[in-house]
Structures are given as structure tokens and as C-alpha cells.
Image (tube, rainbow, N blue to C red; front, side, top):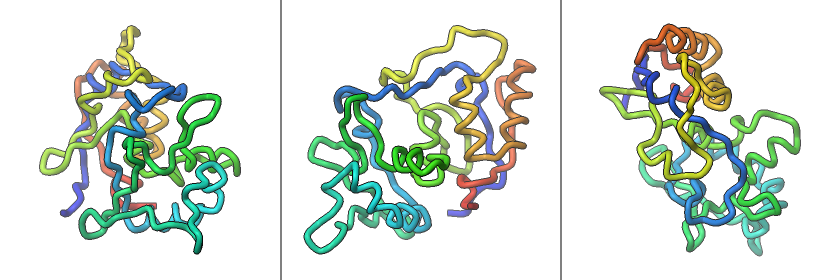
Amino acid sequence: MKRPQYINVDLSAISAIFHRCSGCTSTDACCCAKYEVCVSAREMKTIIGILPLAAEHCPWLKGENGFDNVFDEAERGLFAIDTHEDGLCVFAYHCNSGIRCALHSVAEQIGISPHLFKPYACTLWPLGLQEPPNATLSICDDAFQFPCNRIRKEKGGAIAPEILNSIERLLGVAACGQILKAAKKGLHSTRVQLRGPLAGEP
């Protein structure tokens, strides 16, 4: 499917959510156990490159003859990440602070932005991108079923910093600035050029 050049942004929705990951205590309401996450061939190659570090947190990634293949081709060019029997992503692990992502932990461990290792869908969440022809950036329908998300009480068209960070990493500084400016004007939606990982760019 041809990627769109521009996307609509549902400002009313993304201005209304506050998100902060504090580490889930169980898989019952954990995003790491509720979705099938697919990655592109490029994302998969990046993840494979850090498997030795990820296995320090998730020892089950390593088999008798090297690292297990934890990707299944879902469709041409897209690969689904395996899960455990309880639905938890194979890159998720339990620690004292709850359920954490090994890819995120590895990035922090070596001092780089986690979005360079994590699937863009995970970096984007709780935001979601509706498929073309009406490509729209909004929040996932079930976002408020998870304890890390809540409705923002603040008024004035501001967007929560964590949400802005995700947008900036995936759409770039210019698009993020345009979105923030439109939100402060009180607009309910805006349209921005699709750049960065969401457009298949580095």
C-alpha cells in the first residue's frame, strides 16, 4: 500500500490524554500483552542486531544454537513479534519496577533514544495511525482501558509532554511544532506532512 504524504491529526483526542508508563504489575491490563506488534524488515534487522543485549534481560531469547527466531512473517514486508502463552511480548520482562521492555532498557543502558530500537507502533502508543485513504493520527480506541493513560484535566489546547515526545520522534520537529501551534489555537484537527519512521524514513 502506498504511504500517504500527509496525515490528519485529531487534536481533540491527542490533547485529551496523559500517558506515563510506570511498569505494569500483571499482563491483565498491559499493552505489552494486548496487541500483535509488527515490524518492517528494517526494524527487524535493527532488533536482531541488539539481541545479545536484549537477552541479558530476556534469557529465553537465546536457544541452544544461538538466538531463536522470534519473528513470523505476517504479510509481505511485515513481521509479527512472537509472544508467550499469556500474550506477553517476548521482549517484555518482569523486574522490581513491573513489566518492562528489553529494547527500551537496552537503549537506556547504552545512552540512546529508545525509539531507535523499539517498533514504531510501540513508540507511538497510546497514539495510533488510521490507515489510508483517511490517514489520521489519533489515540487508540482502547487507550483508557490501561492504567498508564488518563484523561487530562488541563485546558487550553496543550498536549502532554510524553505525547509530544512520541510525535516529535516519529514525525520530526517541524511537524510536532505545527501540531502544537494548532492545538494552542484551539483547533480540533490539523494536517501535517508525513515524515520520519511513519513514512518509512530513517
